[in-house]
Image 1 (cartoon, rainbow, N blue to C red):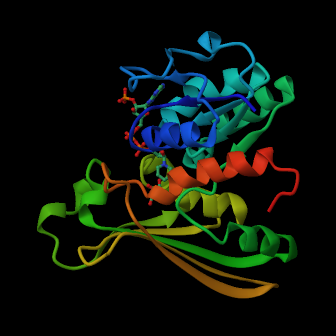
Image 2: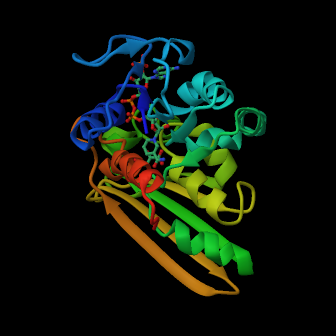
Length: 255
Ligand SMILES: NC(=O)C1=CN([C@@H]2O[C@H](COP(=O)(O)OP(=O)(O)OC[C@H]3O[C@@H](n4cnc5c(N)ncnc54)[C@H](OP(=O)(O)O)[C@@H]3O)[C@@H](O)[C@H]2O)C=CC1
Ligand SMILES: O=C([O-])CC(=O)C(=O)O
């Protein structure tokens, strides 16, 4: 396994350091601006060193759109955290066609949520209702459409700023609603999955909740994720899930 990364922001920086600890390079990092010291910075898939087998996308929707199809078509598997980008049907189709052409796979990291395995299994028997609620402290919504409906700095009680389908959430909140997309893709799909996004001054972290019902029964899952040290927006678990996915892909016995 020879690994490269797209993006050296909050998650990318954590992942690069973790890959070094795991003995997995990275061989190179695709960046737009400057790269952290000690890594080989490149601008595009074409500049990657020969022999890279896996490209880890930590750059958000724009990074996946810019580099995902090219990597997949060139024979490089892609592991992404930008699941919400798949709410754009055109990009989802391009990625699938590129993977087909390159005999590769696009792997969706579990990101900041869990219980996707139960949703995937439940979907086989039939799901009747899946609802996702994402709750972050106000600072976690800075730079998102929440700012148009709430005064985040003055909030004293929890306030919902979005209610709709997972597709709308993923498209409108590209930096904040990838978990809504993960829940949708594992379960009822983008249009039948309900999503609710809340700014909560009392939240002790990034809280993600799934309520699911179906032939299998029902479950409720909730996780309070600690944010990465340099951003209140992104959960550390999202960065960890990329490395977990690489470990899974490299194992003979997979969980
Ligand atoms: N699935 C999940 O659970 C989660 C998914 N995410 C996704 O991960 C993304 C990254 O999060 P985070 O690290 O906190 O965000 P940051 O803004 O800290 O980092 C994003 C980095 O990607 C770079 N980038 C953007 N576009 C490109 C490109 N085309 N080519 C190369 N680099 C690019 C940015 O560069 P520049 O500085 O030049 O803009 C920036 O350095 C989020 O936007 C979100 O979509 C986040 C949290 C959870
Ligand atoms: O990191 C998180 O807690 C979730 C997040 O931003 C996303 O779903 O895009």
